[in-house]
Image 1 (cartoon, rainbow, N blue to C red):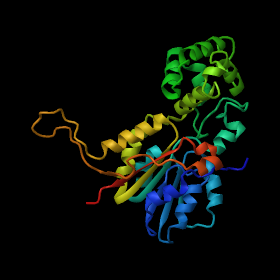
Image 2: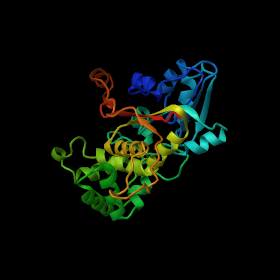
Image 3: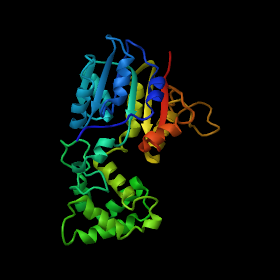
Image 4: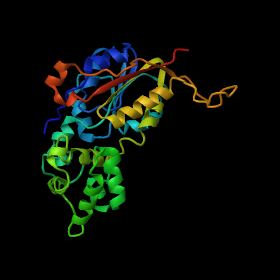
Length: 310
């Protein structure tokens, strides 16, 4: 299947990065390189782009899409490890970083990857297919309470307890191996009229987040990214659901140096340090036209942070 991914909020990201032609930029979620290609168009030959992705299929597609550019470094890694990636490349600071969080359209649409609740496939959901841990392990081996907690916390699913209970009942007789099996189990618990969409949508989101550890490191990833910027450098982050967005928003707020000491203390003891400024007081949302052309952009939010100028 061809790797297709329409870059969301493309013009807004390019404007937000405030690109310097000779600068160094990181696309921490390279995907099919839609955003990266536009960044490269704004760079001179002296500029450089570092493209990071945990999905080898994405990296292969990106190399093909960017074959006309010679100033790209491709890295098979996770954006959560941005400090280590830059250290390995002997790059101390960069001029801008873009993170387009979540899952790509290709990963959803590719039947063999197991991300979709509308296509039958083996239970997988690994963004990095070199890792062993998959959705199969979560669904078949997590204790009922842990499974319920994940579905509730990561999927914000109010039927989480009943879903976990039904999964554990089912797997007593046989392992759950396919997405269709899992969907059928969820449908027995979640009524269509109360699902606010497909009954399996929230559970699949929760399992995907658990498999790929998408949320736990995110706060530190934002902090590490800001610390990896040169003075005046920009960090642009696109989120697609409230859990991601809340973490990014909180990290940004913590980096503007607001004192959190209790009232009445004569001097600051919280160690708050101002790292920069939030450029977007409110997140940038896609236009109606973009949503019409790409329905998957509907929930996207772009938040921009600028590193302090000393």
